[in-house]
Structure formats: structure tokens, C-alpha cells
Length: 320
Ligand code: DGY
Image 1 (tube, rainbow, N blue to C red):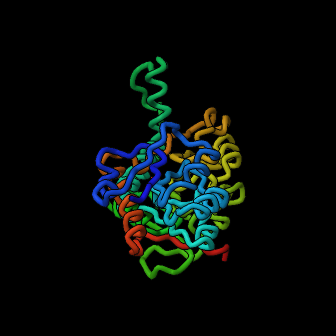
Image 2 (image 1 turned 90 degrees about the vertical axis):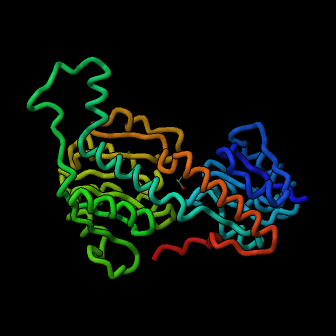
Image 3 (image 1 turned 90 degrees about the horizontal axis):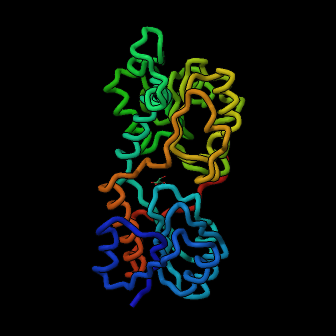
């Protein structure tokens, strides 16, 4: 019987594929697992269902390899927490969960586009904290979403799902990515997209080429009325540069679902003006989390049965 480590509890029914295949599930009580526990448990398992909060580095993978580890399936579409080149070197398959969370994450990105552009968090805070003195013609003035130009950085499944929502709001949609998509709205450079957009939404994976993709230089070319939304990964944005830009009104507002070093927050973000902050809930619906759990577990079952899962990941290419 194969042993599969599930590092954190999944939603109800999430482990069904593992149970149906007759695998033994190892569910530690420690949550999240310490790096030392991860190494110890990896050494005794055939597969791991991991989360983006688990650092699956070379030490974990080598301990697993010294035992019988064959597959790590991340219950997330992003896999920057896994050392994929080391896994490849060791012959351990890595899978993720693409395709099942696009619409849910796009919904959340659109929520942030609306909330940040309409300054909804600040308005709600004023109300809850007793500062609202009644309807005021000049109060809580924000910007329009409808008719604005949306710039998508990255045009994978989630970016395209955000674009579909934007068309319902009468937005013009631009996008930029590594290769010309041939789709209407493609712009060949990030700089051009940033200069032209009223709302910029980030949809790129975290890699060495996207770390601090948005820093002081990029924020400086955005419109002073522009809004930045990040539902990708925190380190894609230089958070100190973002706070500087919000404080100096270099840009109008920001909406963030992801943070550098989460769950720790850059304290400057908490005090920054015109910012909406959510605790990394992009894919957090019961339906989607269950689909993600099952897909990750199915990936483990596939590998343990000698099949190559369709959601196998390969190392991210080096910066262009
Ligand atoms: C992902 O899947 O990478 C999200 O960040 C969490 O759902």
C-alpha cells in the first residue's frame, strides 16, 4: 500500500481519488508542517500532496528520494514553493492544479478591481469606525471601472478569464506576455501597457524573471489615476515601492490578495492610503478548493499507477 502525505487538511471529498485507489493517507496534526517534519515525513512516503505554504526544497526532495518518494502534487496552480529543477534531477514528478480555479480567481481579481478602483475598503472602514456623517456629494470619490482600460500582465487562463469579465463592464482590454498572442489588445512591452492602462492586473507566475516585475520604475510610468491589482504572487510587486507610489499619489489605488513573505505583512501596507488587502483567497470557494484537492490527489494516483498526469509541471525557463 502506498503512503501519501497530505500536508494540510483538504476540503471534504478532496482525498477521494487517494481513497478510491486504496492509498494510505498520512495527515499530520502539525499544521503547517515545520521544515524538519516535512523532511522526516517525505522520507517515508510515496507521494506528497503539498500546499503553497510548504517549502519543498532540495533537502525535502532528497530525503524523499532516499526513501520512496515519486510524486509531489501541489494543491495550487502556482508552484514557486517547489524546487522543480531538483525534483526533475531526482526523477520526482511535480504536478499542480491548472484549469480548475481560473474563473474563481478571475472573480476575485475582478472583485479587487472594483473594490480598489471604487475605494470600497476605505469607505467601509469609515462607516464601521463611525466616521460617516451621512451622504456627501464630494465624499469617497473614486474612479470609474466601466469604460476604463484594463491592462493584463500575463495572458494565461486566469488573465483571459479576467478579460472576459472586463468586456461586460465595457472596458478596453490590453495584455502583454512573453510571446505575441495574435489576440486583439496585445501590446509588445510592459512599459507600453503600464502607460496606457487605467487598471493593471497581474497574472504571471513567480519566477526569477517576474520577481519585482513591478517596482518604482514601472509604477512611475503608470497614470496617476491608475489602479494596480495583484492576485498572482506577492514578490511580483516591490511592496515598498508600491507604498511609496500610493503615498505620493504616483498611482491612485491598489488591490492585493498576495504578499511578499505572507502571512507576514509589510507594516507599511497596512497604513498605506487607497489600498484593499485580502488574505490570499483567490481560489477560496468550496467548489474550487475541492476540485483543486481532487486534481492534486489524482496526479499522485496517476504517477503511483505508472501514468504521466496531464498536469505535470516542468522547470520555469530562465529569464529571457
Ligand atoms: C494558486 O493556486 O496558486 C493560488 O495562489 C492559490 O489557490
